[in-house]
Image (tube, rainbow, N blue to C red; front, side, top):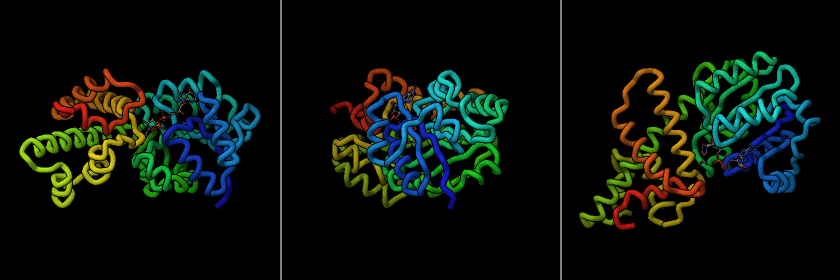
Length: 290
Ligand code: NAD
């Protein structure tokens, strides 16, 4: 596989381990983040270089892994990183961004002679560390195929979804299902406890039965019942994803019912928590005797 010059902006819970996978696959990395400590840590750990105006001009690919669409747009367009790229360079937004804004961003970049993919991920920090993320790609299949060796360094399932914005739409809908599933799983655990069924026993029941889910298998015992609440995905970031899913449903004229109830509950709780609060703490917030 040929090595590429890759710029990577956003070295947080997900970006840092994704960079490690890219470096492990032999790519040359140029990194940036609003927090200079994260940049120097990545440079030391991975022998990466800080992203500069000069190195940006040489990039084959620029990846963003940032909190939301507004930050992605401000980094690429206002801070000007996209303006430095050579014609034909590929921008891949792997953040969980807003599908309609992503489509517009793709058009804006195309007008400047750049290519664009939205390629949000699912799987959390653990699968980012193992390079086994699911990657949901929007754009053209030709650009995805060109980027495949890069995406395969970070992910196990690379799924082509459709035109630009489709990856972000699919990601938001996945997280709607995930968040609503998490809340109903937690509610079932609280009911079980009050009836006298131990929560770990109820979790085993779910995992052996049709109520099994990613939450029951990978979050309940690991992060909720253990009290560590350390999945690495914040409650507020999930809230942002739920807002995106709600807006998406509205934009296509589909009236969510269960989904709206889930989104409203998550919004209400998210309003009162700090940005560092892990999404698995929903277990505590949905309990009346935390
Ligand atoms: P994070 O908050 O840990 O990291 C975000 C990084 O972006 C931070 O290092 C921050 O300093 C940097 N940043 C913020 N504003 C910036 C700016 N203007 N310029 C440069 N850098 C800036 O978030 P995360 O958990 O790594 O999530 C990143 C994206 O991936 C989000 O869109 C999130 O919804 C999505 N996501 C997260 C997970 C997870 O498990 N954490 C899983 C799937 C998808």
